[in-house]
Structure formats: C-alpha cells, structure tokens
Image (cartoon, rainbow, N blue to C red):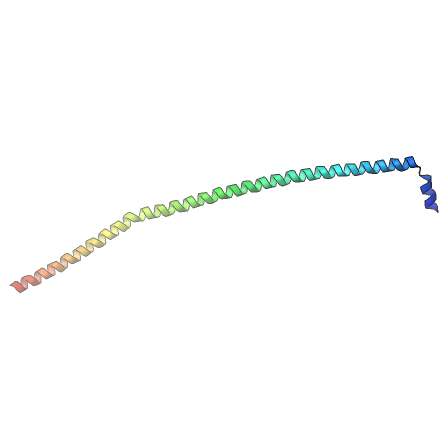
Length: 115
C-alpha cells in the first residue's frame, strides 16, 4: 500500500525527467563503448601491422641465411676443385712412375734374357 502511495506521488513529468536522465546515461555509456571499440580496432590494426612487419623481416632474414649457405657451398666447391685436381695429378704421376718402374724391370729382364 505504501508503494502505491509513493508511486502515485510521482507525477508524469517527474517520471519523464527520470526517463530522459536514464536515456542520457545510456547514450553516454553507448558513446563510451563506441570509443572503446574504436580504440581497440586501432590497437588491433597496429598489432597486425607489427606482425606483418615481423613476418617480412623474418623472410628477409631467411633469404639472407639461404644466400649465406649457398655462398658457403659454392665457395667450398670452388676451393676444393683445385685440390682435387692436384690430387688427381699426383695420382697420375704415381701411376706413371709405377709404370716406368715396371717397364724398367721388364727392360732389365729382357736385357738379361738377351745376354
């Protein structure tokens, strides 16, 4: 019964004023939420840009590493090629020396047979 008396004591104009105040507060809250969403979108875009930059730098780094590995392999191959050629030349010289020794031995045997 008391609540009915209190409710009846509020006039229509007072209720409309209260309703406007509530609507203004809700509008302020909506504006704050919109601002917050805008700030969050800006931060997310900035973060995405940083991630994209990081990925770009990662690809550049990987390319640089690949170039270094390729250069190392190329350099090793070109460095070892003369060494392998010298080794092949030495092996050829050794074979030739062995053949010359074999020919000398055969020559000595032939000379002994001819005598």
